[in-house]
Amino acid sequence: MITQEEVAELEKDYKRKLKPGTKKHVEKAMQDISGKYLDLVWYARSHPKDDTEYWDKTPNDIKNGAFKSQDKVRKLYPAEVKELDECETNWQHGFNSGMLACVRYLWSIEEVGKHLADESFPELYT
Image 1 (cartoon, rainbow, N blue to C red):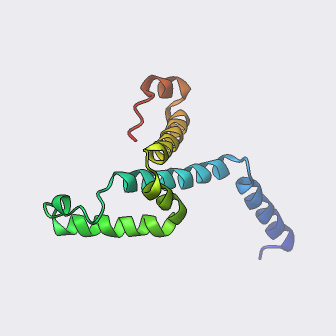
Image 2: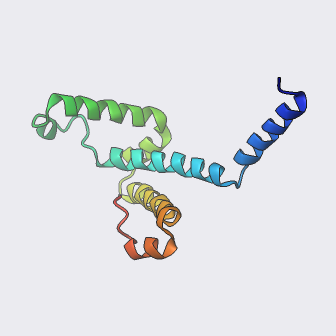
Image 3: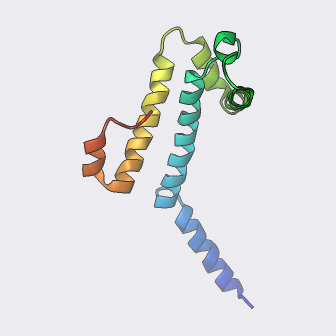
């Protein structure tokens, strides 16, 4: 049977691994922000529902999947979607694309090192 001291040590070890500034904490934050900006960039590039000229030529399963994904992005990020929808310039979309590119650049440094990441920059597929 596990003792109270062992439980306390396991909890302390767990908290240490996830405390701010640790690698796992940073990776989780990067995953979250990467997902957010990927969603927002995709949303901005997707055709609105009322673009019937485009959607009439699109298979129903793709069209319905896109509409469902648009609704999901609207629910997850209502303020950001409002900014995209109301922005008269492409500034907000450019910001979101830049954030996505930045996170992808940081991921590539983590995966292949700074030298190789710099060689492929700015080809970050945003």
